[in-house]
Length: 365
Ligand SMILES: C=C(CC[C@@H](C)[C@H]1CC[C@H]2C3=CC[C@H]4[C@H](C)[C@@H](O)CC[C@]4(C)[C@H]3CC[C@]12C)C(C)C
Ligand SMILES: C[S@@+](CC[C@H](N)C(=O)[O-])C[C@H]1O[C@@H](n2cnc3c(N)ncnc32)[C@H](O)[C@@H]1O
Image 1 (cartoon, rainbow, N blue to C red):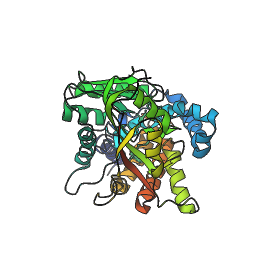
Image 2 (cartoon, helix red, strand yellow):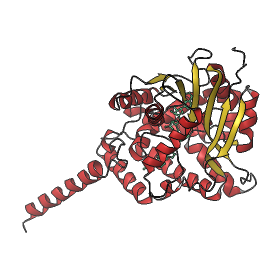
Image 3 (cartoon, rainbow, N blue to C red):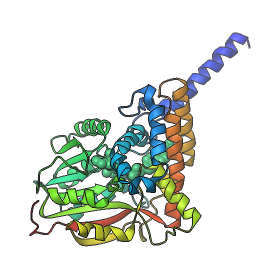
């Protein structure tokens, strides 16, 4: 074979491989976005590395972040940076719902996700005519599932403007924009009137609040008297031992890689809810048997992670994805190991469910 032919053949094979990795394999989740569209939220390409470094130095010691008042105040801004960095990677590799669900044998991840979301809707008794609040709504996967399942009107709030735009675009595409609204704001001080919602929920979002009472207090304020609130909380369980270095390493890893100002203990949640005035109707760790492990979805993807790292690297070299994406992706990969360890050892659950009620006789503040 002539040298020219060899060069052209090699180039052709190379191009085909890039095409296969980026376009065919690049969309890890059927409904996720494509690898070629990976952006870092509203951060401009030249600022991605700096923002990532700032994020990392802030969340390196999560417990300190929660305990000093001055740094606790900065948490929402760093959480916003975090979601600029990870939102597209989450959508690409996980889908439009940014949470875990117990596995369901014989069912896809998407179905397990939907069941976990519809459970919220059923616990709230959401129905047509109800105005329901989604506290920390992400790009709106749960909001659309709950609006479709219950016929209710859902208003979501997220601190991240990039997510607001993504969520609104998804709502339009799903034909649910007349019943799904998205607002950019801080759930520690919400731009909603007193007694203005029939129900509220938060799925794996309030763990970003330095003090749970602050976000629960806000939900209490905007709920109508008698209104219900369901929350899926990230917590350490009674198996966690602060004197076990392996436990501490896993929990710190989860906190660092998920923008958390210190995980709370499972047994603290109900009393914090009562502190702001809620009645606690139910409390249950949805990860406990007979539920099947939520972390298998993370574990089973090792090959996918390897492929994704390669895709991200190729895209960065080709300057299709901004510099810094590889570091963020690597951080998420490590976080996945810590989450898996947390699940396997039983020291952590991302689905401690509480069902709360604002008393019917509660006074509006
Ligand atoms: C509730 C929160 C987020 C929970 C999960 C949705 C995300 C936690 C860790 C994320 C991921 C880890 C590994 C990524 C992988 C390396 C990449 O190739 C594809 C995306 C991941 C699977 C990514 C997806 C979302 C998570 C599972 C927190 C922030 C409170
Ligand atoms: C892990 S995501 C979960 C999103 C959504 N509940 C879901 O399950 O798909 C956490 C969400 O909480 C939001 N959030 C975190 N801190 C916030 C704050 N102080 N105010 C408003 N939203 C916040 C993030 O922007 C993000 O949308």
